[in-house]
Image (cartoon, rainbow, N blue to C red; front, side):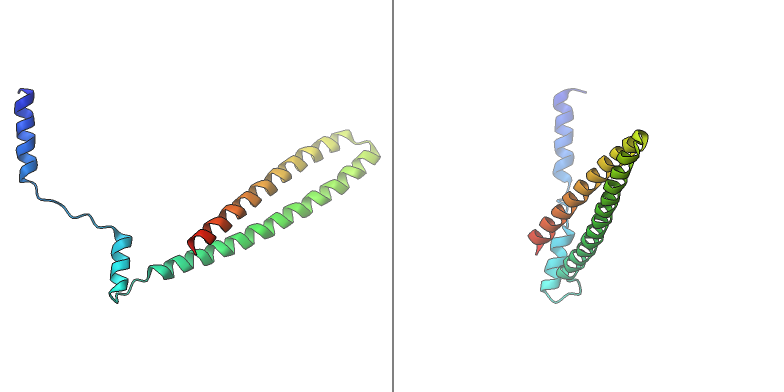
Length: 121
């Protein structure tokens, strides 16, 4: 079959096809709600913001716990120095780096969540 004949057959097939309606569910929900329908998209958004706030609070508490562990690590480091326990100091330094990284990550997530909830309000 030649290229021209194939294109002709494709064009004939496409010409026989009827347009199809594509529904955008969020827009449909909004239109339905504006006409007095059941679905209120703003309720869903408010629920999501509430969930995000709860998660943010949990993350903040976790960050405080990690910071408290870091302070304990500082005390242990001082004691290990006084005792000359170099092996323990190495482990504490590794733990301290890990805790610092976790605090940094949690702070980043909290900032992102705050920006997201503020831009959606």
